[in-house]
Length: 290
Picture 1 (cartoon, rainbow, N blue to C red):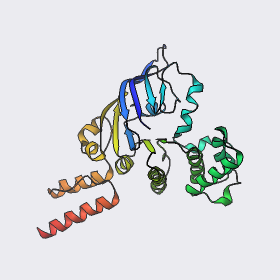
Picture 2 (tube, one colour):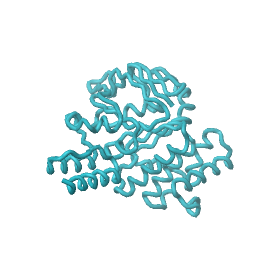
Picture 3 (cartoon, helix red, strand yellow):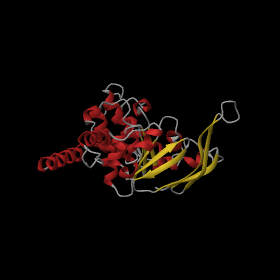
Picture 4 (cartoon, rainbow, N blue to C red):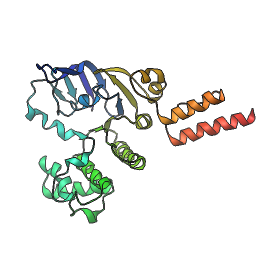
């Protein structure tokens, strides 16, 4: 699902002394059927931007087109309802969105709200719960009577139950330990890989995730896009990123430190554990020959 912003502006507390432009006359096109990460320091506008992608926010000025839907400041809320069937959103701490008496009912709620029969909705809900690793013995349990990690998986299953074309992830691994973060990102990436027409847009402070999973990385600062490119292109610009309060992935930092200490050439654009190990072994093998 392609997204195209045309002079998009969003102003918080408009016509008050505290008026602030979070997005400022932004022109942007994000292709469909790709994994896109948006990075930037706190206050750069990235979360405000993605809340326009399913109509949670409407532009103060300009417009944004998501697939076949165009959203402007005067767009009626009822016209945004079908858009939300096609664009799913996972916020920070999605488990806070849980509300139903049972896990199965919570996940089935979205499909039923969009016209599925109870039988159809529960079938979809069971499939999605299984896909995120929730055992069927838990289906009749309260979503508030399971572990924190399980609660988050239930909430995500509720988003995936609508089978969106575009999945927006706004810091989805916040509060998780490293193992939990890796498991959650693998879940999302597996979902993305299942069908060719799916797209993901990830807002993250985790440079490792942006580097490892993205087809393209978009860099925001001051309510606008200041750079975009492949992970290798973006994370090769360490000095530019540091100027706006960002870092490169830890694997790149490690390899750069090794290169500086040894005063030898080393492939520093490794974004996974496997690539990092391969770079170090290649370096050691070369040093051994020398």
